Image (cartoon, rainbow, N blue to C red; front, side, top):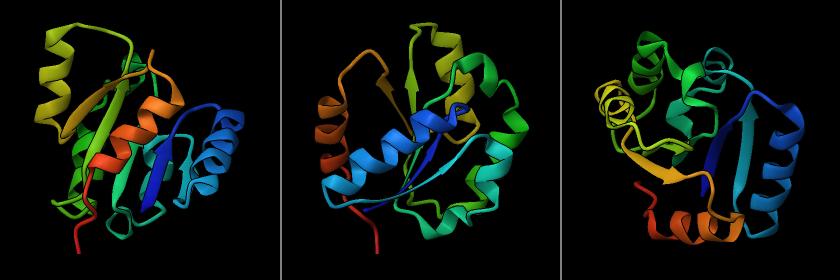
Length: 119
């Protein structure tokens, strides 16, 4: 699966690339939503947003990312909150699912395996 992983910490991006590549996925990373647009989001089968929700306050940027990605590409937000308003706002901007950031990378991998690549 081709994954676009977005996190503001480039060292965490390196770890994600290593982790996903070791289990057979292709992973490219961006440090912001703006940078993610440069990777042509439509070329990916999954977009993972692993950034604090306060950094996702730009609904406009999320909508732009969604418009550049195929509608069949899941945009999944890794979250550390249970604020229902945040979830609703992100969902209305194009985030298709949420995954608890407190879970392990192995749990995340099991979740990713449940997503079917769209051709």
